[in-house]
Image 1 (cartoon, rainbow, N blue to C red):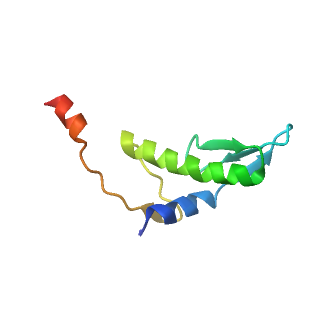
Image 2 (cartoon, rainbow, N blue to C red; image 1 turned 180 degrees about the vertical axis):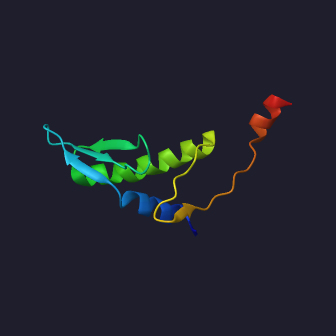
Length: 92
């Protein structure tokens, strides 16, 4: 399995983006490989920028809560989980 940097993984996830134009002219973007990762923008360009932000937010949330990060095309996100001193103190 190939390990990807943060930026490489985000770019790969964005390659799965599905764009659809809404009745009001705005755009919805779904990243189907990241369950629940959906965003929108007034224009397709804005929606694309929002999609990058949504993918990054999805990843941060998944890492924070210990959720599984999907392997995409045989490639995984390389990351190191460090302990949070605030969380550790609350369990002491």
